[in-house]
Image (cartoon, rainbow, N blue to C red; front, top):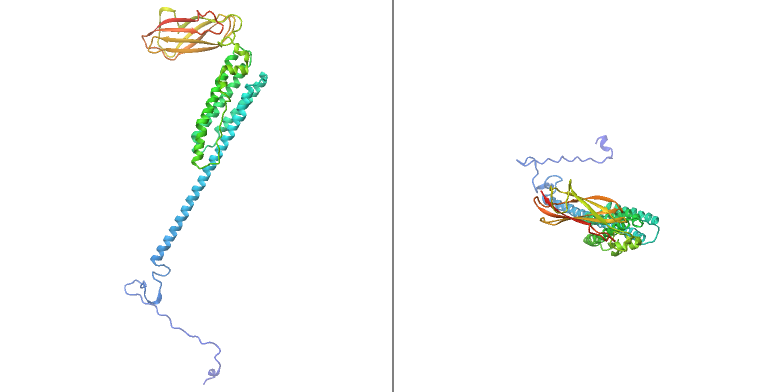
Length: 386
């Protein structure tokens, strides 16, 4: 035994394992491992799952993506539906606000003024203020952001508010004359009564078009917690009658001599027809043939004289042609004629009889209230169009 054999073996003995032999590639396999073979190797190559497992994973992935897509679609639709409902609710609330202003402020103040007994200046100032409010309501209506579901209702609503604005504006312009002692007071009153037709039309359009269309849009979105307001701007159809308007605004104007109502002013009244011209041709009355060149519009110049002792207002002159294929009749109104003065007015006929037609043209100045002699108010002429 050597010296080294007597020493204790303090370190563990290292065991050297023989190297693992490399597997030989199967003949003709190009280095690929055999499927299902020994050695416990993973099929299909390292890290690649079997085809059936891969397909299942793909199905799960695609199914999850489909579920997410469906949820997103429903979420987007739900959000879109909510936005559409909120837009309709906002629109209806805005319409309600404008209607409440139009009915509760503009209409009420206007007819309180028209039916009141304030001074002329106070009335005029008050109506001008109402006009500004009516303009603001029409502007607000035009600026509404209307959803597509109420596009037609919005168009009609703008029409409603424009009717009201136009009517109030015209009344404001005519009111100063209507409440005065001027000869044209009754004409201004008639114009004011005429504007009541615009108010009536606005009420009809709103009740028959705007309100039902908004209600249908709300119903289509299952919105049941909203009410569409009614609207009535014209408080009474009595305002359509000029006499009632005159009674409210200016009772003394009902005696205007040209209205055909009431007691005429003292003194004589009436007009005389002096002559009728077409172009440069002065027509001869009776059976004399007046040759006239056909033209449209055909200007007929009527000369007249106020032969009374009173100024007259709203004097109507009529030109009528008979004997052609159809009757032609046109009216012209003179706002005022001065007592003892002469004047002329041109009345344009939009159509004329065909060439070669012999006709009778009748020109008439319609009698005014208090007029006794009407023998010189009318003249007839034989006219040959060529």
